[in-house]
Length: 326
Length: 238
Image (cartoon, rainbow over all chains, first blue to last red; front, side, top):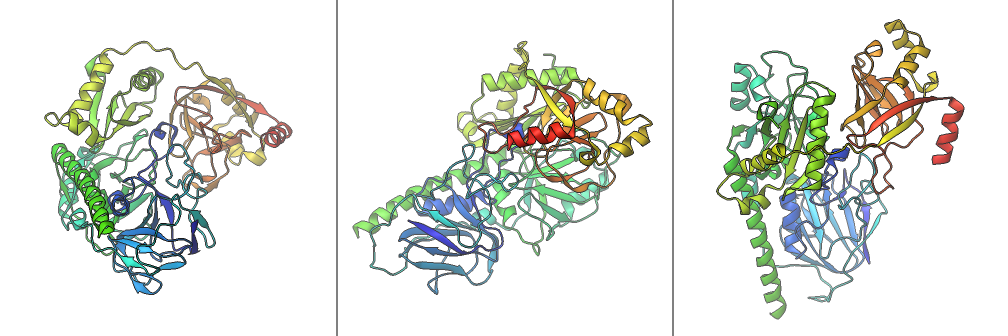
């Protein structure tokens, strides 16, 4: 059994936690832009946290379920409806056969995630189900969804918990602490000290905005014009998700999930991993500020987030168990 | 290895880079390749990726995996110590000994910049091709695109800067030069290198277990083929 893509939306792809172990061959990790919400969506339907999910932007896809299943939505709130009935995000939802999921308006955040219990029937490319759009591999046929695509599900129809109506289960994952409205924290990059003194100050005192020409490869920022003390010609070396590069135009780009593996622009700073999700969900009207943090704190924050996810997963198992007994 | 010959810095909170220099040269690259192989053979716990570059090696690691083991020392410090101990015990590991011949057709129809470069450099097209084919190149690193080999060093007589305005589409298989570097575009993509030929080989093939023809540390040499041979090889492959 399966789901069918009735309308593809702007950019709807299969993503998981990313493809690692091949960056020395120039094969970038890809993966969900907002790993935390991907994991929340999985925890809610009792999947392993890094199971592949559907990632979507607005306009969002319209999806038909050809079988009953449990799903969860997390990340952006695009006013989801199933068969015309509004459905909240961050809850497990029982979906009966032949339901249609659609989204009516963009409310909060930029990127949505849909998990289904048991995951999608896919064949991995290089140990991951993330879609690598550049080479056309991984995910669903290596590409974004188009109308008419059918994706198999790993679990056959489940016993209906309540005949044939869509039902939202009454427990909710809290995610807001991943998106606290504070400055994005960063570790200075190896080339930070090449900035002139004024630019160093401006970098931390100014606000930045994400430009519309941003994508899964990188978020282009508009902000103060930053300058190096002396021009520098660098030879290429590795970059990573969260790396902030200074382009020759004096503007910055933050590398995101589909980033190249190497680059030759000065690396001013690196957003800490615990703030990746927060950054990923920022839109073009948000004001971004940066603040420096320590390696110790960034490590602790990341550890706390992962603990939180594990606890959420355990809580979901208990809740569903209690629900079934009830 | 002498501690003064390298510098280790964090690349964010889940990666570190060991920098051995800031130029493209064989001796530096040899050190990088040795450390790269040593770490592939004796993996450090929590390491997800090892990325060689011209003068550096980057280690990407899972910071929370190491966190549990080392909550007192920071992760970066712990990983740095691991690397330093590897560097101190670095062994002379033989090169991977892969020598790969790459056929290239330098016909003008596949080499849009060849004629212009020959005029700028004041060297005949035939001589330029001969020089490009006479050199053996090392694959210093792979980056920019999946499977794109950064190779050096191009003979001084045929060095030329990249194009002022990059092309929006460079056909896959195109062979380019930029300064002392030469490379091959594995996929159709935008690109700014000067295009002097095209190989009929698939540099990147999704259907293969290892999808990239070339790997860091390989040695390669180009050999000139005719347009007819180019078409033949291309037909055989596809």
